[in-house]
Image 1 (cartoon, helix red, strand yellow):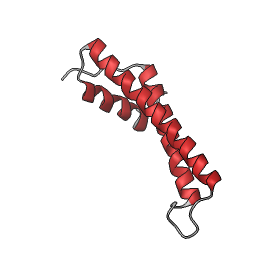
Image 2 (tube, rainbow, N blue to C red):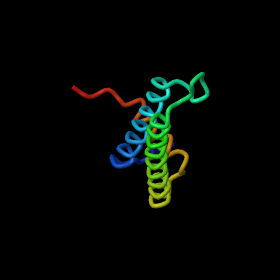
Image 3 (cartoon, rainbow, N blue to C red):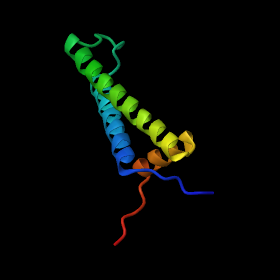
Image 4 (cartoon, rainbow, N blue to C red):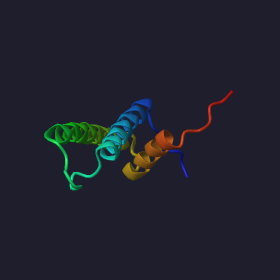
Length: 96
């Protein structure tokens, strides 16, 4: 099986998406669920909505870049996406 070709740009876009998602999770952990007793204040809703929008934007950009790269290189889109996510979430150890 041929190795999937990915770029540093695709990796950086996925990292940005993952970081935005991690921040969204942090806010949820910090604020609790919006349906809990007392709910969220308007400020908390605004903070979470802004974080969700940032994550959504970054996911869209990363996904579009993967689709474009796969089409341009003739690679399977799903395989490119999997290779990018693996490179970000399970990087190879640095060589000494």
